[in-house]
Image 1 (cartoon, rainbow, N blue to C red):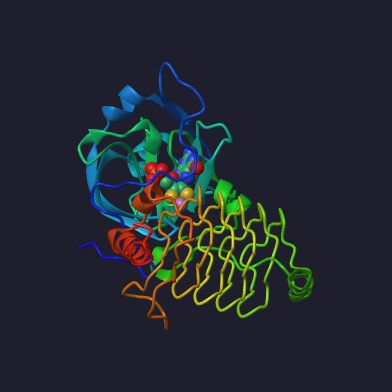
Image 2 (cartoon, rainbow, N blue to C red):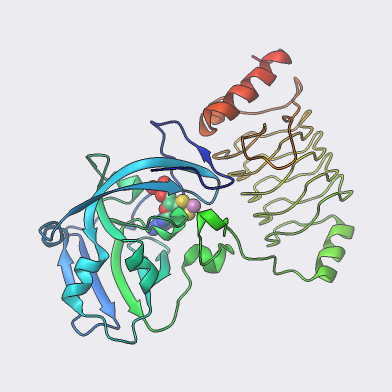
Length: 343
Ligand SMILES: Nc1nc2c(c(=O)[nH]1)N[C@H]1C(S)=C(S)[C@@H](COP(=O)(O)O)O[C@H]1N2
Ligand SMILES: [Mo]
């Protein structure tokens, strides 16, 4: 039985957003996967060889940390456990890191016992079709019961480790290393001290800074400069942000409920999973922003807020980007744009 963890929204059945890297580092004539590290018998498999191991099918839900979910995807592949039978992990093996054949050497890790309990698999098919290259084909790891950043696209090596090595997003973006969607383990706590935060808020200049999870709820921040700042999970609820500029900023999962954003600018910003319930978006600009999983009106599990964002005829938002929203959210935004004569 599938169901939706707290704070998640369903994408339409035929939609599967792309997140993170879009392609493997380069073509490989023969796809291989090596299993190394804390094992008695390191080993390399070609994709062909892997596909001759006992295959399994598992129906697994995708939950992205940026709040979209896609339920009941049927994956075909081989269990990590089957590979490990051949390589014989030694007793020091406590973590497993999946490494991608990708430009930035992307990786993500799990506790070995969790990876096995959650039946982590290496999949080459999704819903009966070969896994698309953009989604990690020919081979990606898939772990149920964790945010999808724990499922690595284009896996080329699996390393068993005696101590953990943080993955790309976990080390670079403050993503939570446990990643349990039922406990909403999305981000680490903010790394800023209260004093640092107070100084930045007074100066109203966040440009290019990494301010993961900054607490700015209820603040007077009109005219804030935040171009290209890293503001994942920032809390701007009830804040006054008229004329603020967030162009090119990363605001995934940022909280803007009830904030005043008149004339604010989000050009080219990453707003995946951001929440604008009851925010005033009059004359705000969203051109070129990424909106997957963004919220503009209350969802069934919204906390305390009931209304939707306000738009006016000067609010700039790409109609094509509305396809990135869930049906419920897209309907709401279209109805608002119609009511102000924009559609
Ligand atoms: N190699 C690689 N794997 C990756 C990523 C990435 O950027 N590179 N992003 C992760 C994140 S954050 C998510 S949500 C999923 C997205 O998978 P999809 O693009 O198939 O939806 O892949 C995960 N695995
Ligand atoms: Mo993600």
